[in-house]
Image (cartoon, rainbow, N blue to C red; front, side, top):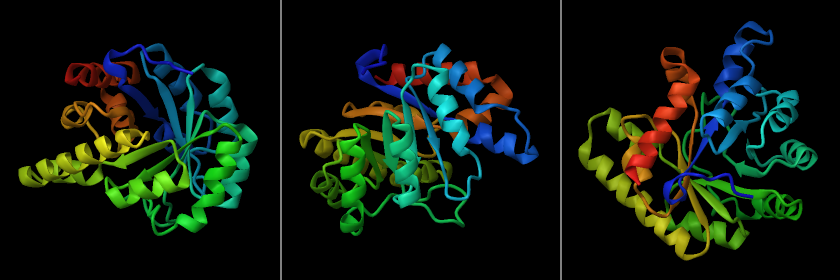
Length: 251
């Protein structure tokens, strides 16, 4: 299944969690994440990402099916490696499932999954998702040890955590930015060389996306919080269009 009409195969997946966060602040039905998914589909997004958290702080169970029904875009379901989330993923069969670390107290996912340290725990989750024809992705640090673990687990996709790269940029630490870029670029090359598709995301903005988008072996960027935040000022259509255009330019 391909939804890519963009130069050099760099896809944009848009995370719509925080549309649901705003909805849940009032407990009603508005704004509806399904409407966000429809808008993203209409302006050139390649996929929808949604993270069903243990505490249901944004996306709710009922949202998953509605989002999948609303557009032809593939849904990338972010999930913790728990029996509850596995059962939900197997019931809904999204296009992809990205296994992420999840701590109840964190505001957002900070840092990558320790796929190497949790190899034994993750084995059955990856196998069961793959058996159901769900494309498994692991949200990891750009680290050769984690890529090796992804290979051993048989995960076809890894998504590199770009949070540290983003933080160095916000802090004006140019040396840190350069070192992170090299680390991510080397990891993407290593993944591609071993037949694993490389994605990236976390903390990406209009200002910092292009150096990551320029890494040839990265096939997809997943961006959420920033795009939904910018949508308050620009509108969601313009926010997604602008990111899409910056990514295409970088390629």
